[in-house]
Length: 201
Image (cartoon, rainbow, N blue to C red; front, side, top):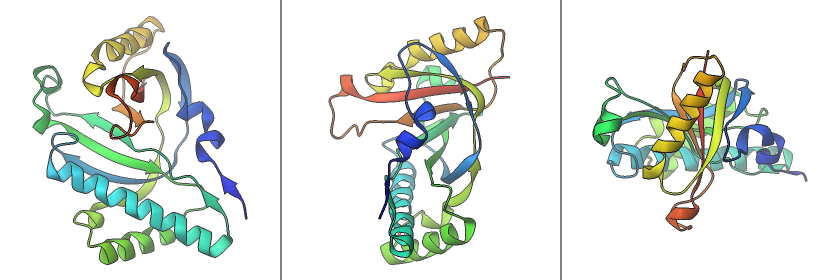
């Protein structure tokens, strides 16, 4: 039986330093769910997180039962945007739009994912399980850095990342991307680690 640490397999894309760096992220399979509302507070957001994780663990169990191989469930990620980007400055969090997602190993295919989405949603009565989808996603060319501290304090690092992209002769494209390496329920706010990534063209 093999145990695979996907964060090590994809180390380049799931580690970052305090200073910005360039990455090129190819498309890989993800579980994804879309929504709108305040992160961490709105019921829509909580239901989305509450659907993704059980389905991700259901897929892992199905693979382990079939092959004997185990792997680490990857951290939660979020794509963020709004119809009017000024809401991020004004703090109108209820207007924030997002796609939450969890990377899946390459062995997972659409048939297996669909079966687990259906069965886990029914078994655990997931309010938003039917909204989860399986599809490839990749940022392509992007810049990223590691933010250490509360999510609310990301602003200066986001500005620094955008300035780095501009200084490199590129323009922002695609959606603001965050990878949550820490569980905020288990670590002090000042120790929360988040990869902030921004695609460019």
